Image (cartoon, rainbow over all chains, first blue to last red; front, side):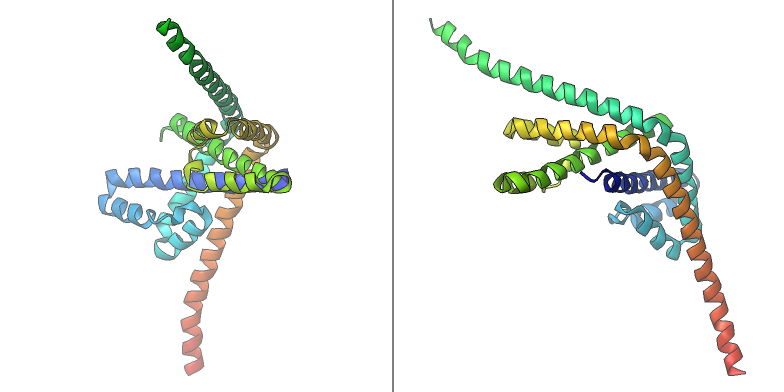
Amino acid sequence: MDLKHLAKATTKTLSSYLTYEAMRIVVAQLRETNPPQAIWLSGFSSTGKVQDGEAYIQELLLVDQGMAFRIMTVRQHIADEVLDFLPEMTRTGIQESNMKLRCQHLERIVHFQVEPEQDENSKI
Amino acid sequence: MDLKHLAKATTKTLSSYLTYEAMRIVVAQLRETNPPQAIWLSGFSSTGKVQDGEAYIQELLLVDQGMAFRIMTVRQHIADEVLDFLPEMTRTGIQESNMKLRCQHLERIVHFQVEPEQDENSKI
């Protein structure tokens, strides 16, 4: 398990996700101030190219520099505000989810094993 | 900008990504120890359902409990090892990327503005 490579790949995914969220925030802001631009940005971003945050910003820079700079500023702001909470939230989230999934599965097995017995009892 | 909602959504994305990476690690391990199972797990995970980590594990629990438990254990291990490095790595990554993209764009503009002048000079 190459943890260094894993950390880098996770960082890239996280950075791309924050770019996507920044785009959504700018679209929401534009809906209030400049609806045609909101529609344009939404359309530009809808073809899946926002999956790779860096390539997305590079492409947007060629078409609308101001918009690209705005999204870059917003993603940096989100990063500053949100990132520090993520390790604890994600760790707790995964722990709780694992426990919940194990319990649900246990309940399902017990229920599955108990049901036929109940049927047999009702027949007696 | 609803930062609390944003942090939750980012946590969910991160958790799903770690589930995906855990699946890839288990597939790589199985390739060494049990190739047919590696092929099966790879096929099961390839239809995009791993995009939502929780739904993916729930579905896998119904089909192969041992495999699901194994992926749950691996994702928790990765979370413990990798998460603490992410805030700093992602923050630095976004700052550097923003600076690089701005510089590249500036260079492109300068190059674009300089080129026609050179052409005119060469005509003189």
